[in-house]
Image (cartoon, rainbow, N blue to C red; front, side):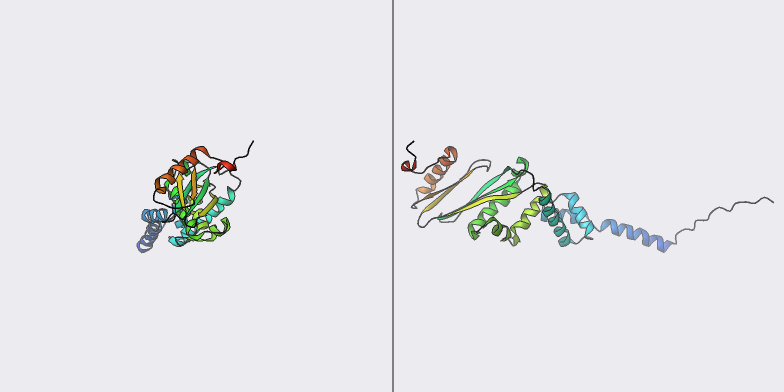
Length: 231
């Protein structure tokens, strides 16, 4: 007798089960839409790939995805702590009556980031915040809320987007009683000046700016002639 091998039999998946499997695959694929990714990018400024990954990790939960991106920014800060942040911008803010003003310096690693409008806008907002709140230290500034979000959190958001070390290097607030504070930021936002005048008058609007520009150009070491050492 000749024996014949019976071929393996592959049973078809029943139609309802197959339909469910296909549906689940489509549902999983469509759970993270391009619009979701764009919305998260608009809210955080992070890269499209990072936004998509964060949404996938959180099953589309937008708030949880934002938290993941912020933690990534904090992790980036730790990893890049030994990097040099020698680029950046200077921003100023003045009160309406020009009796006070603030100046801040925010640093990053590359000129490419320093020229980014989002980075510059953050520095300008920070200058206004410093003028309004007059924080006692950098630590107090980082812990304070700017537009409802902690300054440190906003720094982490920038870190997550640009993948660079970003830090607030220094700030200063100048206040005068009955005087006038002029400000000037040189083209490119690399150099800024505040000049305090003892009395306020309408003519200082133009003269004050001219003096501030001269200070930026010459970087004088003294204000009055008698302050200059005899030697």
